[in-house]
Every structure is written in C-alpha cells, then in structure tokens.
Length: 328
Image (cartoon, rainbow, N blue to C red; front, side):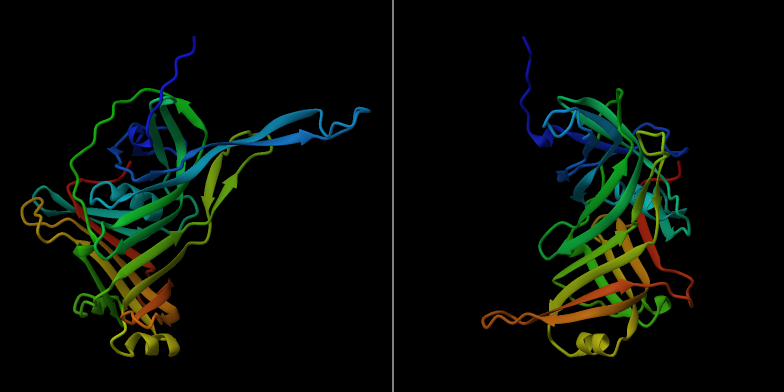
C-alpha cells in the first residue's frame, strides 16, 4: 500500500551555499526564511509528428531540455541577504566594522559569469534536493509603510540531485520599512549630507537577463550567462511641492540612496544592522499623482539606474552584519 503525506508549504526549507566552482554543489551556508517559494524543475518535451498511416497527430515524444526555475520571496535580514547580493553583483570587499561586526561593500563586476549558488530544498515528500549552478535572473527589494522590507529573487539552475543535509536556522537581524531612509543628491559624494525624504513606499529591481547555455548534445544547461544588467525602480511620497515633478520634466539625473538601518539594535561593539543601496546616477522616467477626490494627494516617480562615468560606478550596496565574509 502506498503511503501519502499531506503537508503545508510552510514545512519546506530553503538554503544557499556559494559555489567555488560553477556548477559544483556545496554545502548550505545559510538557511533562508521564506515567505514565498515557486521554484521547481522543468522538462521541455517535443513530439514526433511524422505520420504512420494513421490520424493520430504524434507517434513519440522526447525530453530535450531539463532545468529548474522559479521565485523565492522573503523578509530582508542583514546576514542572509548578503548571499543574494554576492551572487547578484559579485565584487565584494569585507572589513571589520566593529568587534564581531562586519561591513561588506558589493559592487557590480563587469562580467557575464557572476557567481553561482547551490540552492537546497528540504521537502517533506521530495526529501532533500540540491540545485547546482543556481543563478539569479532578477532581484526586487520592496518596502512599504507599516511592513517588513522584502525581497523577491527569480532563479534558474540545473536539475536537482538528491542528497542529505541538516536544517538549522541562524539568528539574524530583521529590517523593516520603518528602518528606512531615502535620499537623492547631485552625485554619490553628496549623498551622506543630503536630507532624508519621507516616503510611503520604495521598490527597486535588478535584472541580469540570464540566457540558458546548452550544447547541442546536452540535456541540461552547461551554464547560465548574465547579459546586460539593468536597474529600475519607483517610489511614492506625499505631493507637498514641485521638486520631483521638476526633476522629471527637466530630465535631471541624480544619485539615489535607499537604506535600511536598525538604529535600535546593536551588533558587535557599536554597529547597527544595515543594508544601503546607492545608485551612482538615476534618470527619472515618469511622474504621476494620485487623483482621488477624498484622498491625500501622493506622487510616484519611476527611475532607471545608469552608469556614472564620473564615479565609474553603477550601484554600490553596503551591508553591515555578523557574517565575516561571503567568498566561496
């Protein structure tokens, strides 16, 4: 008799490790608390539609491509988010911030083969699965008034292999929308002294435009190549003056900073859990206002991150946490 197990999605665990060699699986470095998971294996099947003197439309079928893809969503935590930023941007410098606390600076590496991860999935029915050559296709950071700050990543990988592992979640440092600060300035150097701007919401998406790389003889991908890197986002605030409307209409480009810093929580000696995203330059692409008769008038600006020749930078992400480093 078959034995069946019924369970809820909450029982599935997800973990990451940074691969030293692309496509070679490694152990879990961090088990990641999730809010959403839609990652699974895919199988592309083609049909043999040649005729055999009968009216049936096909006489055989073949598997031609096997891979895995999907999304993972969660609340931003200072330690675990660093693994995703490392795979997203690659170039990282890690230093001691204060005793037992570390500052990691992530920069966009000018390469089409950014670091791969091993994704681990612990499932009550499917057991323990590892997905090597896991690559980030896109990543979105979102913060809304009265909520936790969140992330969503879309991923692709090789098909799974079955293995064993032990699930153990580390204590981490949660970051909420109320920990946020938003600034704009003429350039990166002026962001530190710029005034904070009151927002209702903020969202930014990094897109790596992955392309699957197959050999003609291969059933599974030999690589995923990240192509052009793009950054787009938006923010909403009360409409109290004409500043942002003028910036958009005049096509004025600005440096942008969005940070999450929990100033009430100390890590290490005197450090604070932090995630700060700096765009060296952003072009403001669209302006709109809310128009409900009985609503407070708000404004929404969309922006696109662009490369700054003056700073030789596109994006810089700083993370302060208790993880010593993110290199494989």
